Each structure stands twice: as structure tokens, then as C-alpha cells.
Amino acid sequence: MLRSVPRSFSSLCRERVLDMKENMKKGRSAAWLTAALVLAAMLSACGQDSGTAQTAAESSIAEAESSADESTEAEDSVSEESSMDDSSAADKSSSKSESSKSDSSKSSKDSSAADSKSESSSDKSSKSESSTVSKSSDSKSGGSTQQSGGGQSSQSTQGGQSAGGGQSTSGGGSSQTSDPDPEEEEEVINYIYLADGATKYTGGGVSVSGDTIKIGDGGSYEISGTLTNGQIFVLTDKKKVKLRLNGVSITNQSGSAINCQNAKKLTVNALAGSVNYLEDGGEHDADKGTIFSEDTVTLKGDGELNIKANYAHGVQSDDDIIVNGGNINITSTKSCLHSNDGIEINGGNLFCDGGTNGIKTDGYITITGGDSVFIGGTREEKGAIYCDGLFTVTGGSFRAIGNTCAMPDAQTSAQNVIGAVFSQQQQGGTLVNFASGGSGILTMTSPRTFKYVVYAGDNLSSGAEYTVSYGGTSDASPEHYTYYGTYSGGTDGGSFTLDGNVFFYNVK
Image 1 (cartoon, rainbow, N blue to C red):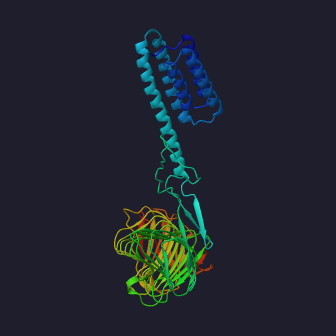
Image 2 (cartoon, helix red, strand yellow; image 1 turned 30 degrees about the vertical axis):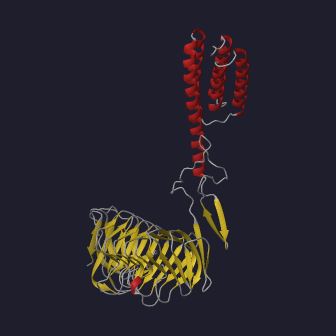
């Protein structure tokens, strides 16, 4: 038969619970364990001899207080939740203990209810601790590192073990680890060291056949070294491939330098401080670009990338071409950038000297940032910018010169754009100058004949008047066919007012 707890013992428990509540408010210990020990001591008293129960309970409470004193750095969120649950459980338990003194049957029911509450509180504590460990494991995943042949490859750890070697656990002792967030997971880099007849690599997804380096799996590949007659060949099962160029020189005497036949997206990243060279050769109609891709190509980075196209295009994509950064210099027999779907320029310094078109797409062109130069070829129908779709300029600056040039759409463009259109071709080397209020805006030329000169930049203002001069000289040397010195002399080509944000002026 269950016995009720003596009033003196009940009072002792209540006093101890109140003391612990005050300690938890002071941040001494958010003790799910403390609450569980106190409740266990109280509940055990209901089924034991009152004297023995009191002695055991006092021992348990003392142990709980010792645990509370040792833990002083509990997290605020856990401390608040523990304080609320402990307070509620202690008040209910005290009330039930007082009631049990006058009614033995009711004490039995209260004891059962308290058991249920105690077990629920313990389960919540276990789940909370498991969640905390699991999140810690997620944030530290990807900690193991392996090195081979001088390169580093960082690999994330899978399974139930965190990077620090600890194992996350949940209530009941079972091992549990949440899947890492793909955006936060540390990038694994494979390394490729190019050398004629002696290319080496670390990691998986790479195979070598002569001087053709085949990449067959998605991921990041840092490449350095030289191939005098070789190629990077990409063929994956629609996986994203990132090529990190770190001092690369690749020449192919009979094809493209980089040939991507299948990838979800190809990214070419010129790493900071690096200078990289890519050049094609021979006839290669199947891959008409020094960089060729069946899928979207993104150019980025803080380094320098020099591309020479002897047969066709500098960069050819059957999808989109996106420029997000880098110092990119392209000279090409045909178009420097040639895309079937669209071209986006969002950043970087881009120089395109095309034998036919500076850049060409059968789709759209969007320029949002960066600084670009586009030079068209010798054929009269070819231009600096060829766009068969919508041409939008919302930011950045560019200079374009050629026999033709697409006009940006005024409705969708936010950047100011001016253009000078000559009725007759001007000889290569002829300088053209834009000025406003006696201050020079732009002076540039082309190595080939031209009729169009177009400029977009932040230093243009709607409603301002601009003058056009051609011929003349500059006291500075050109950089990418642009002169940053003082222009003088030349023939007056007339003036115009920038009406709206896009205006092409017919030179007199």
C-alpha cells in the first residue's frame, strides 16, 4: 500500500524546488536533469517507508544541487524552457503531495500522473540535447582533409560522426545526424597538374589519355600547368563542373582548348593573382570555340584569362554565356562571345576584338555591370554587338565600335547610352571623340574600318548636350583602343541632346 509523504518532507521538497527555481533564473543551471532528480525523489517517497524515502530524497536533492552548481553556462533558450517546465512540474507535484496526505486513493492517481509528467519532461530534455548536437554536427561537417601530389582535397564526413570526431546522439542512445545543407557544405576540390605527357591529378572524376584530360563527374577542379597540344574534355551526366584556372596555358593544335560536351553548367574561374592562356588550332567544326560548351558557360574570378581563337569563336555556347568577373581578353577570328540563347554581363573587365562580331547572340543581351570593350570585324554587315533579341543595359559601362551595332531597348534599359553613326566607313585608326561642356567623355578608335561608335556609362546625363569630333589626336597611348588623355584637333561632327536614356546620332 502506498503511504503519503510526511508534511515536513513535503515542505522540504517545496523549499528545495523554490531554491532551484531561483538558481535557474540566475543562470546557474538549466537542469532538465535537476528537475527529473527532484521529481524522482518525491515520487519514490510515495511507495517507500517515509523515513527511508526522506533520507533517499534528501540525498537525491543534494546531488541535484551539486549538479546545478557545476553547470553555469546553459543556453538562454534551453534555460527559459527548462525553467518554465520545471516550475510547472514542481508546483503540480507539491499540490499533489499535499492532497495525498488526506486521501490515499487520490495520492495514487496523482503519483501516476506525476510519473507521466516526469517521463514526458525527460523525453523533451533528451530530444533537445539531440537537436543541439545534431546542429553542431551539421555546422562542422566537411572537416577531413587529404593531400596528394602537393594538392589539398577537402572532403565532408558522412554518417553519424561530426568533423571533431564526436558522434551525435538522440534520446534512447541511437545515433542520428541531419543531412548537411548543400549551400554550407565545404567544397571538395580536385587538383590537376598539366604537363606534356605527364599530367597528374588528385581526387576522382578525372582520367588522362595522352594529353587529353577527361573530366567525367561534377565538382570543382583546380588546374595549373601547361599543355602545348592538349585539351580539357568534359563529359558528365548533367552535373555542374567548375574549372578553377590557376596559372594555366593550354594550346590545342587541332581543336578547342576546353570542350564541354555535357554538363549542367560549366564555370571557368580565373583565380586571383593568376594569368591564364587558352588557344585553339586547326579546323574543328564540331566545337567552334576555344572554349566550347553544349550548356551554359559562366566566366568569373579575380584573375586574368586570355583567349585566342584561330579558327572560329572565342567562347561558344549552345546555351547562355554569363560573365560575372575576371580580367578577360579575347581575340577571335569570328565572334569573341557567341551564344545561341543569350549573353549576360554582370561584372569584370571584358575586352572583345572579333574578326566578325565583337559579341553575337541569337537571343538576348543583358548588361548589368562591369566594364567592356567590343570591336567588330572588317565585313560591312558585321558589328561590334549583334543581338537578335532584346538588348537591355541597366548598369556598368561599355564601348563598342564596328560597322554595325545593336541599339539597346530604351524601355527596358536604365543606363544612359549614346551612339555616333557615320554615313561612310571610317578608316581604322581614326579617333572619335565625345565631349560635353568642354570635358571629354570618350576617345576611341578601331584597328579596322567602322561606322558606329557607341558608349554607355554613369557619366552620361539625360538632357545634356554632347559633341562629336573625329580625326584629331590624343596625347596618351591607347588601352584597348581607348585613349584617356587630352583630345585635340579633328573635324566637328555636330552636337546632339540626349533625349531620354538611349540616343544614336547621325554624324554630319
